[in-house]
Length: 342
Image (cartoon, rainbow, N blue to C red):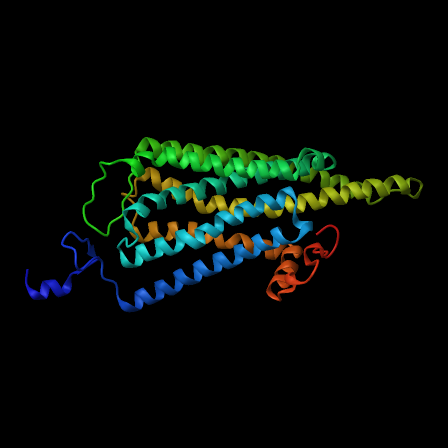
């Protein structure tokens, strides 16, 4: 090899003869990509941290639904804190600089976070179905303790499922290392097919079925709300009670719609990825593949923006956090709602 060839080739580890060859990118491309990765990571962590602090701090937000949202925010926070930076550096540098051990551990974290996110969406769908279907019985059927139990069960099952799926890749002693600086974790095709069913088809079927019923019920209840607006004076007292129930149903339907948007966006981001796993990425151009994968990761930044758009309580809690008013005495008991039905 001539000196000119040596200058043209760059290695991941220059002092190691078994090092992988590094793909050389232009300086401008690297700077742009690092800025994008940094912004995506910081925004994802910051926005989801606002959600976590809001729900954790304010007593009024300690509801079963918000605890499920909190669990989803934790999963999104882990994406911004671990997945986006590491995958970003791996893509830009085309080398793995985080060691063999973490090369095996990283897919476990990714699988666990993805499974937990989908599990959270299923529980959120069930929660909203009960709230809209039987709003008067919701408080007795769905409690904070039950929500906490579901969250713990969800993360525990997600971790066990990830270990099962990646057992050979993580614990196999026959892993072939082609060169230092590479990180390839292979999963058997039958496991990929199983993951498609367990992590996409099954939860999507449940979520779509529940939200289909939710909107049917919401449409029926909307007709009831319109029918009681013209209540006669002779039935004024009875009409007042009906109106209170109708307003409650309207509030629950609005919350279901908001969370339905979150679920829909989440699934639209993840479905292309799972479809790609079946093709084994052979017929997909690398640029399209990377774009779809990064849509997945950036999706973790979207949920807090939806909360800010639809939930007045979130906007108010953010103001309290950013102005450090949460450190004031008894700030956790402040009325975070602008009105009773926000």
